[in-house]
Amino acid sequence: MPGFELFGDNERKELNDVLENGVLMRYGFDGMRNGHWKAKELEKELESQLKVKHAQLVSSGTAAVSIALAAAGVGAGDEVIMPTFTFVASFEAIMMLGAIPILVDIDDTLTLDIEATKKAITSKTKAIMPIHMCGSMANLDALKDLCDANALILIEDSSQATGATYKGKPLGSIGDLGCLSLDFVKIITAGEGGAVLTNNEKFYTNADHFSDHGHDHVGTDRGAESHPFLGYNFRISELHAAVGLAQLRRLDEFVDIQKNNYTIIRETLSQIPEVTFRTVPEGGEESYSFLSFFLPDLEATRKVSSAFKDQGIDACFHYYDNNWHYIRKWEHLKDLKSLYPFSEEVKEGLTYLQTKTFEQSDHFIGRNISCLIKLSWTEEEVRERASKMVSLILKCLA
Ligand SMILES: *Cc1c(COP(=O)(O)O)cnc(C)c1O
Image (cartoon, rainbow, N blue to C red; front, side, top):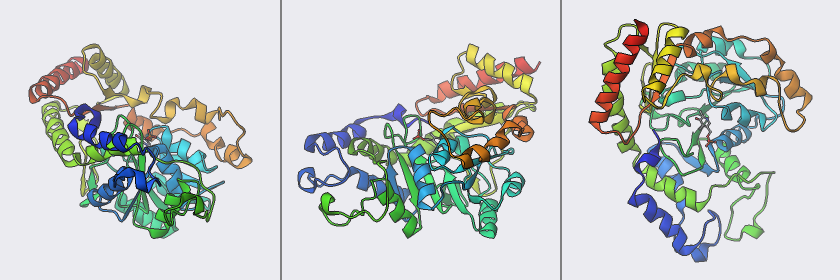
């Protein structure tokens, strides 16, 4: 997945444009910049490639989620439904606004289970946030129906699935708002960065102003602009945007490479009857950033995971035992280990985590291994890797 594997002359050229005129900021300094507006150009490129009316670049994917929620008016005491399997950024972004993350079981798609989501809706729920983990997606039609029926906002966290599609539409463009990450390990990287995507005019304007101290971005004199509401600084720099621009132009190429590598490994692993693969919702096409599969039980999965590590099959994750991506190891959230006091609403709202168990999520994550698909492998390396994986799995299952 990481786009940094294929850095080259294009990234250098875009970056040098910025360094040569010296304007590292995305707004203002019109006279000095010799027509270079990398952040604006990258936003246009995102809009065209991801088929969405508006893209707002920001400083990170985590910021993108907070901004998307704020743009839709989600805040203090509001509940946001999210899955138990994701990167910690997802609940951090919700809690930034004083809102309450409601963790819900996943199913064999490794994303939100629809029945569990339905049951989690209360009078305080404001938004449902599916997280398209490891290059594939939630059942977006079902979630959209749930949102419509309950007047909720649908926010897609597509940080790990840029390049995937659902019923022909790019992920991130389908919900009321979509969020991308451009951090260093994502398929398209800017070093650091993120984006909010939306077809909603009002949400876009909100995101645009909110991410830049409330600036309304009218006219060419920043000091004279007005501030219709409060904001923060979540701006991206021109340096980051320049790298992201060169990278995004290669998105289709990156997805094609991943698809080839993924397909070889998947076909090879398919020889083993005990290996099953994650379910992709009907109409979905993955970005092929990861190959995610299930083994028969937790014990076998732990065995295979450590055999992979010992035998040099790198970048394969057993998230059940991972500190950052699964509820099981999030004691800091469960115990509210915060540097600063939380509101009573948040404290109260999170008490359910003291007792709630997630057997269904354990059932899937406990048996799941997700292997990163790299861009830089040669076909020979992929084939060698695939057959080594097969023999290690067979040995562990014997
Ligand atoms: C990477 C990631 C984020 C956060 O992105 P940053 O740009 O690193 O802040 C959010 N959600 C998911 C699922 C991610 O993988």
